[in-house]
Image (cartoon, rainbow, N blue to C red; front, side, top):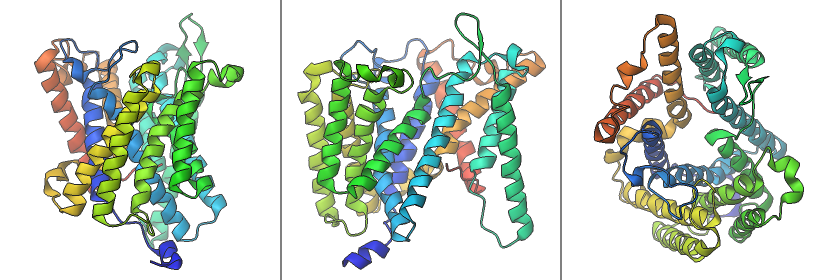
Length: 416
């Protein structure tokens, strides 16, 4: 393929990418539902911060970060290939980051929300906020009808105004009893993804996706985390109180960068473009990351809570090898039917991620308005925990899957 062909060719659509993302989010929803239940197997709980270990649940979040990394070269290369100016590409990156940070921020503030000081029940505030988010970031169908385009624009404007008012009236209660506004105890899952997406997208553009340069950037990120653990970033204390640089720009971003190193295998013009070559590259890379994680284990051990460098490396290796298995099955041998049930989540991940929050808000609002415990209708076995509780969580996860399928079938796609 000539250089000109490489610039104009479209990145191939990977079936394994949507399937892997879908499975990962499905598991994420399930483990979020069983979190806090009693009598749950250790492998399905997060390992404590002080324990040198990782569980199946501890691999879920790195899986999503890894997939974000795989998608970055494919997405940016598509924009570059169609001739988008660099400023426009960077602007899009910052807008998307801002959206993820905002969503992450309002989600983590739910725990300290004060209905009395805000004047709205928690369920109603968050339900309205999620509705506004959907209206703002839904990908509306293209149409030649001026009336429909005006309607879509009006919906977005109305949703922006609604969200602005909701944020303006938001009030929370601090631990000392003070009435506060939105706080940043941490950025939440979406916020962390936002910081990593920003960091790694800019790194990709800066390095032009060169593998050696990306490997160097990944090594620097690992070093950044290690340095932060030993006081190397203490001079940035005012910043680190808001943003944990060692974790978000260090070890977490290293997982995303590992994903980018896999993603560049699938962009137009990639040196490694035959399935056999990709399989060998991904297998060697995943194994290398896994072994590197164990090699660095004596430094800080494995810890998802502390986002240690060994944890980042070993989970990146596992995710790489899992994606390899998906790739071989779905894109090499074309065995895809088994993964159809997760395709809606893979193609519409943000909807699947916020649906539990929407459902929880509706349950809370119904409980408050009707003066009943509506939560008991959906969670009759939560207190019991164990196998019954997990079955209850599986039913709820299936409900989210079903609603996501229906929403996706209706062509309501949410994308920041």
